[in-house]
Image (cartoon, rainbow over all chains, first blue to last red):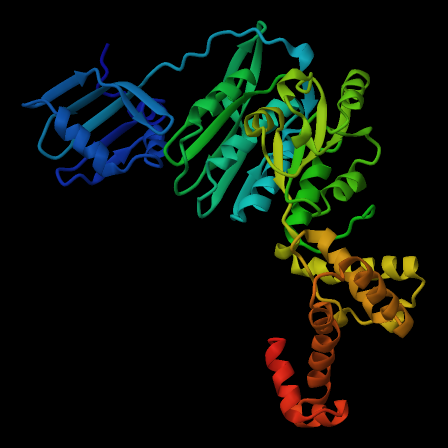
Length: 233
Length: 244
């Protein structure tokens, strides 16, 4: 099959694995959609340095198995290549996200407007620490079955981690295109993201434990906490 | 204090938080110094829930058996919270201090802190006004005859000392000569002893007399005239009683 006339760029553009092309000075000449998102969490200098470190000695392509974590992004391998002196390519391969099928006992959980609990947790946080909090939420989020007391406690613990931050930015949204298998059924996921200029990590273990008890995945970054909440109904 | 009112912004936040979760199965606790109005505040929000004082262990156990949701006052008085089935219940509680820090952290989703009165200056006139009316009602006095400026705000024990200060001031301001003499009589009856009783108790009369006289007339010269005593005698007494 003659592939010369095929335009491969859209396939790279919409690939979920980030891909970047650098010029010899480290300036980005091209990046695909995934790389654009990744650059919100890691600076281009770091990625250029990575490409330089793993670049093959001569023209060609080199694949290396390296475990890389940038915030919630996790890559298990990279490919670095160049065919001339002008362009250096870097591709990062997403590590598979393991989301095993789960069984959750739903009879003990109560349908809840989690926006309400979130607002109560923000109110408590403001009464204690008087820090500015911005909230971007999805008011159309359906009611979710949760252990109200435990979930509220999880929110309190997460907020406490930002007690000395200048400003806390919170976003609650549906994770489009992602789902979990719970009790044999496809279940959507909502993400509660908290971001600030820094945070305390002393209670991370406790946050993970409470989140686990709530069937929630906690992703704890240096400046952020993300909770992936299965939308059980 | 069975009614609760506040203009404080932190208390407004706490009220908002508690109201948001009022209909949910969420346990909350309000912790703060004694006599800051925690009990009245919680009563005003959760008057429909059964209420029990943790000091009454038997009633607390019985209430936990009977109800799924209840208010517990003085939570710090529970000697061993882990021994009670608190986790299965929705608890709204108040506590004066945090002796069971771990169990409070484990049991309660939301832990609020009640600010003491010294951090709520906007609430002081509100409370003074309330206590003044209450005291005037009790003592059968006309509240219009008094100004809040006449009442020093003693915040050492929050609302308790504030209220006590109002009563003391009100009593002292409304006593007539016969009542003052009766008060002194009662005092001497229990305190008069030793070998130098006359001189020692003279201070009770002389010190307020000179202090009030100086405040009213401004100078020792004028006061000595009013009192009909020698200026040097007055100066000596001022020194003796350590009057500034």
